Length: 456
Image (tube, rainbow, N blue to C red):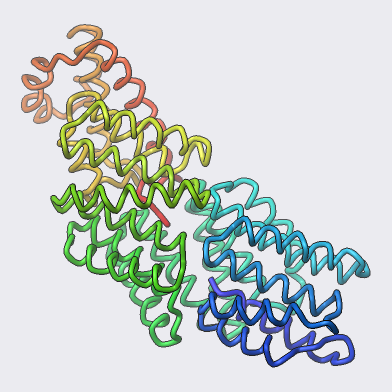
């Protein structure tokens, strides 16, 4: 999301007092590139503006430092972004109380976005609400909308879809009041993700298409990458693999050209997963391994967990169930550290449960199908969970112990699956593990607020 439109009113207000502010032509050119999401070039100009000898601590140096931090964050360089935020905090410590509160709010929501992108959702939410309290009465409607969008994204990652949708709509209203088409494009993208996670595919495609059109019209090169990735996820869920591969490949090329490291990591993840689903495991493995390396090097915790999950799916496709479980367990552990009730945990539990019970093909099909969303569980999805638990109980504790679960299944399911399940004999340790995973996944996906589809 571009911060330039979010701070348009604030910049206009600051420029009324020319005695306190100095806006060099170099900084203005940097703003122009920042608005066009050309963050690499913008960073060069902002660094030049920071070298001016007559630059005051506040608001000039403070403003430029925040802009440099924004550029680094947009490029996925979180450590550098955090360093410049700390320097900006030092520049704003000498202000009067009212000005200090607004300056701190602008610092806090940037810290919130850093925490969000690094997978620390609870801390990001706290920072977002703190910034919201400081800035909600200000004239900066764009900044308030940006904070509302941050809160909505945190709620969505934590599995709180109702709260997320409320703040998405608030953010959309704020951006419309500010007549900010860039902000509107970003909210449409986020709404597309919300509909996708709820398996409302037509509404997801409609929202993402609106965001894509605005990105092309306004020349938002980096946002175009994000929308292409999300379209790729929807196409993959709808089993339109050729369309998914096309948009993901375009997103990866664009991210690499712009130096967007986190965007490239996400594009490679989605491209690799789609290649595996399409039946090209070799190509998928190459993309996933590169994405995994980039996620570890860049400190992208969510992307690292997803890489382990997708590599587990690759191992399932190759019928290497031991390797699949190793990768899925690693992804599950990372997902629990991010959000114990989040989407990464639910999907890892689901695939692990079905894999360990000998239903690898079912797991792979379930995870790639639109029916793979547990939003909230339908009779069919509940049947899948009960059958996995029944299968694990059957082979590990005997036929009698599993009859309680069999009675919960529809008669047609009992007739068609009884023979196959009673003749399957995995090891006792695998059965216990499958039962635990299936119970955990059923418990998580039975909550109405949880959506199991991946959201960027």
